[in-house]
Image 1 (cartoon, helix red, strand yellow):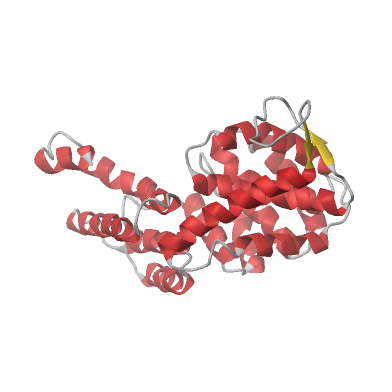
Image 2: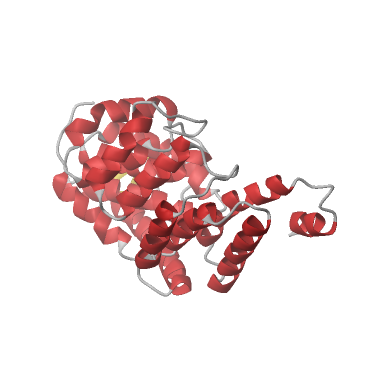
Length: 301
């Protein structure tokens, strides 16, 4: 707010394009905090549109971010409508995302619409590195791995996983990515690597300030632990750095207790988002994820 207030009062002292660029970072983030009400979210979106239009940047970029916003709120029909408006609007703006980021956004959009084959086809131009940027294809790999899991084609994704393992590091920026990576490792029975990734990421996740990212990661962890439980494993020893709020003896945790913690957190956080959004979009994610376990089989990486 202070930056907008300063810009509105002293437009000569703050770069207008810099202010408008910040909206592209803010809009995807605000729906990920369930404490921000819908009215406020759309107020910010409307302010973005008004400023982009008044500054001569048109509405194409605004439509692009409206689609992202509605998709984050679990409003598929509205997201589809804004996607079509974005595709059919012929405008150029210096504030448009780079080609690699646009392709990555399309891949994510189609994956969330369960158009997995189309998502993979779109991803080819960034996975092949025809188009790249600072974040892409690093932020594309996990979505592609998830698409292969959904299509029951995990063997076809081995090289994608190997490429991802080189660049998707154990950092906060990749919390949500590691959920799909954990799922891929779980479905391919690479449990040793899955446990290693779980241990390395958990301290970061537990101390992260966004419950949205936590919930996404917890889904991957929950899927992994459910698979271990189905295999008859009852205990897991985790690093002392894990600091999970779950009872243990010398860092030996009962799988049942871990599952109870992760499921409780997934349900609690999903309920908060669904109550704000007025649907059950996030509550359904748990069962959708667990359905993938029927595909679990050994794949050598």
